[in-house]
Amino acid sequence: MEKKLKQYKCSFRQRDKHLQLGYFQLHFPIDRSIQILCWDLEDHLEETKQHKERLKEICDDLDIDPSGETCKAMKGLIKEAEDFLDEVKDDDVKNAGMIAEAQRVEHYEISGYGTAVRYAKELGHDAIAKKLQKTLDEEYNADKKLNDLAEKRLNDKAK
Image (tube, rainbow, N blue to C red; front, side):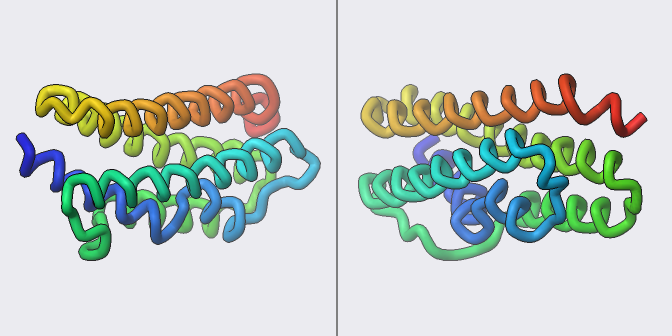
C-alpha cells in the first residue's frame, strides 16, 4: 500500500504542470460577463498553488522525488477539453462546456486525493492524511461551486 500511495504522485505532479483550473482560466475563452466564474477560478488557482506546496511537503515526508512522468489520464482530460472548446462555436454552449470540462478534472482529482487519504490513514501517516484531506475538501468545494454555477446560470442558456 505504501507503494500505491507513492504511485499517486503521478496525477499530483501533473497538477503542478497545469494547475488545472488555472490552466483552463488562462487558455480558454470564458464569458467575462460571468464574473463569479472568473472569481471562483482565481480563488481556486490560489488554492491550487497551496495544494502544490502541500504536495511538495508530502513528497519530502515520504522521500519521493516530485519530478518525473506526466499523468496520461490528466493530460487526456485537458486535451479533450481543448478539443471540445475548439470545436464549439456557440458562446453559451462553450461556457457550459467549460464548466463541465473543469468538473471532469475536479472529479479525477477528487478520486485521486480520496484514495490517497485512505491509504495514508491505513499506513498510519496521519499528518499526511490531514494535509491530503484539506486538499480533498477544497476540491469538493470547487466542484460544488462549479456545479452551482452551471445549474443556476449557464446550463439554461446553453439549451
